[in-house]
Image (tube, rainbow, N blue to C red; front, side, top):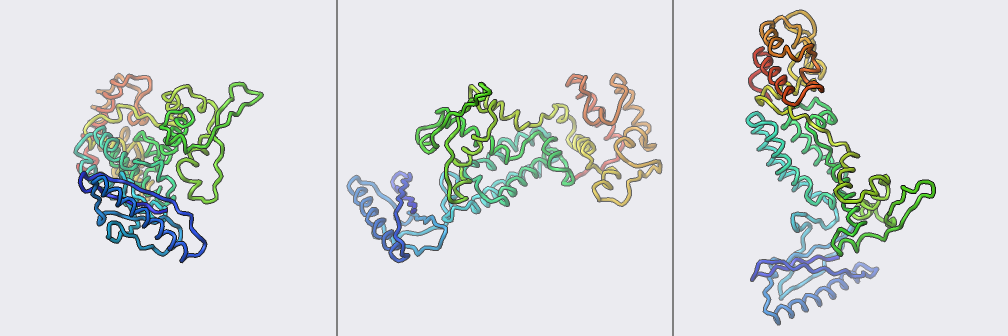
Length: 407
């Protein structure tokens, strides 16, 4: 297939012209066939433009050849100007490559996202956690997900590259370190993986296609549907798509075949959602998006980060450093036991005065425990938990145990 990008110089708009050509078996004859047919069509376009006073710019016209093999490029001319063949072409923010790979597009995503990440990194200890979270959702995640159902057929390595950008953003938002597991990191920040979000987007696309909620030009490329009924369960009636046969793996992983496969494997209760809103709600429940308590976000940024790190065992407490293979011993400098969270809050002799004040100010929440100080108390209101967390952060600040600067 050849793709032409024809630019109208007089209005700065674009015409796109595509034409499939059935190729002969011999390579030389293939090239000759392509050259003859496309040059003929280009002459017709030029004649039409002259008739209707439309000015194209041949020097800015690009040609792309889609092929898995190296094929000799034909000589194509438009308005007596030789056309330029390109390997990649960016159209509406999506970089298409001549070999049907998404490598160049993923590189472009990484480059754009890295700039936003750099800005977030500079603000890591200057703005609140909620602000950093909003920056990610409004500015970074759209870059990572733009047209993602289309390029989701990329390699696993490229998918992992995109996923790592979200992990880095989650570490900036929460202040957690690389020693925290990915599952705990996403739970702390309240996000699901980008891979799961792409699955949900494909299922939403399939739901819209199955229920006629897409434009006709998209519905037409979905396969027909069949009604499956279970004789033993009357409620297990679903409408599936006919499975699309595929000879090439690159086609089977593309957006429509993969969406069809995901839809056909979906459970009946989610399948039979009456509205798009209820379908999205069931998908969210299915993929279990974590809920972050609002009191996790409060307080002075630095001490909020310290409390978050203690909660996830990646703080500068000696036992956390020992647990993460960053220190050879877990003992506290007071000489009376291992310096873990419980020792820091309840036992260490260095912080007796600060601890006494903490116990006085949190008397209404007694009896206290390490879990309550770090995770909150389920029986309390949000405001009461906020009050408890602020007292904990005041204690952390008054101990001077943690450096005033952090990475």
